[in-house]
Length: 72
Length: 360
Image (cartoon, rainbow over all chains, first blue to last red; front, side, top):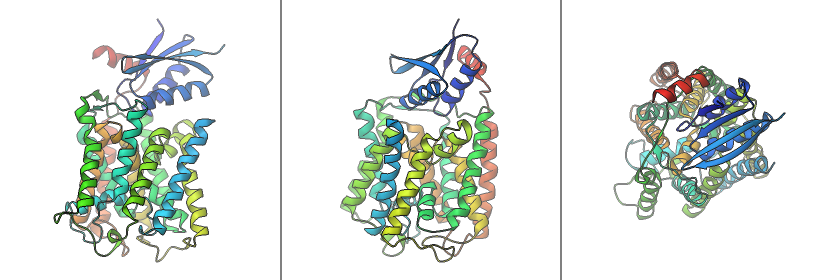
């Protein structure tokens, strides 16, 4: 079961901090982060890319599902 | 790369407009000061009766409207709220209290520095200390909790208030106060001030420019993205002041400033810590309120209430310095901020968030 970090309703920097922690502690190559605002979407994306992860973004209603994949 | 360029451009435009606004009539080193301007608006509405700082500053209203229109256009407008509203109100009050001790929000601190006001050089490490303390709380799991989706009515509140204030400015009914002397009487022409605010509102919405985030992200993540904008404000304002002869270095006799260094330092510590706990500097709160976040609007109301409190009870700093009562306010603010910070540590980790999600 891949990790899902639910950051909906949280504002930055909290989603970034939680996503970073999830990536650092990930047991698998994939971490999914749910966010509910564009700022969090942009910031988590920037952070993940800076940490060398690939990011795929899906819109889910008014929220965003960010799928972070570790580069091997 | 494009991101990086746009935040630098946004900062540079803020710095440039600040210099232009002062040349065109705004008080010295006060081209843009969100705290000062919200305070002036509170005075204009009669919430406080300090006769020298009453004016409905159009920069504030157009900043909100610029952010609102942009957020609508890029489909980022989202009506949310309900994350610890009372604490946000108090944080807004404390942020304003600290700013009115030093005499400026973080934005004006940078502009004062760019004008050669060395008192801001003392305030800067105080501000960084405040942000650093806030980062400690964040690292330990500080959060004001999740916001909830709200109906659009709540999100439209901030732009609606901005429009009403603009109408009051243009019609100038008798119950609105306009300073006849002092900083409140010094203002750039309305159209220029409104245009400047609009442009900054648009840029700040797009780039997320924030004078607190600039320092916070450096401390937390060694991420200097927002800091580039912060630095650009300083560099361009400095060059602008040098070119136009507005750079006057020194400690004493600086415009709308005092030399009580302990309180310059600690006042900005209060602002820095309050801004981290509230999730944004005064300018960022206005922008977020324009994007539909009523949590940010509550913080702005807190700022307005804080301004009224500080001036009605004679607590605000003045060119003469900070009164003993004002000094007590700084100490009390710091205590309150520690209580709010320590009392809201709840998400320790990703695991905590998962459990929280299951429970809800």
